[in-house]
Amino acid sequence: MTEEIDELGPVDWIVVEFPGGKFNGEIAPALGDLVERGIVRVLDLLLLRKDMDGSLEAYELTDLDDSEIGELRSYETELAMLLSEDDVDAVAAASDPGSTAAVLVWENTWAAPFASATRRAGGQLVASGRIPVQALLAAIETDEEVGA
Image (cartoon, rainbow, N blue to C red; front, side):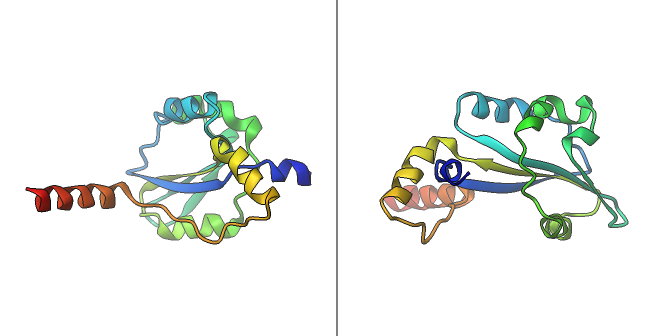
């Protein structure tokens, strides 16, 4: 088991909210393309529906029909069930009433060889971050305005 873990790439997670509860699986082909090309491996996927009164229902893929999740069902066998009840509570608190949220946890398999080599060399991750696309666009706009 330790050897398998040593071969893992970085693991990320996102929560995507669909206002009005309109989740229909249209994201499945894009996610499927990433999986088929070996870029990511889905580790966990959960859907949460928050009613207008604030009540919450959490769904695993087996709880939903194909019209709701599209091709996402094909990832059921790869799921590791990493999300805890506390994670679900945190997503529920952040979600707006009347929405559906998809929680996705994935391994960046493209980075696994580098991550494994770094660990074998004694390196350890001390910081990580992500730059939002909106921040990049703003920086580009600023650079273009200054250059003009």
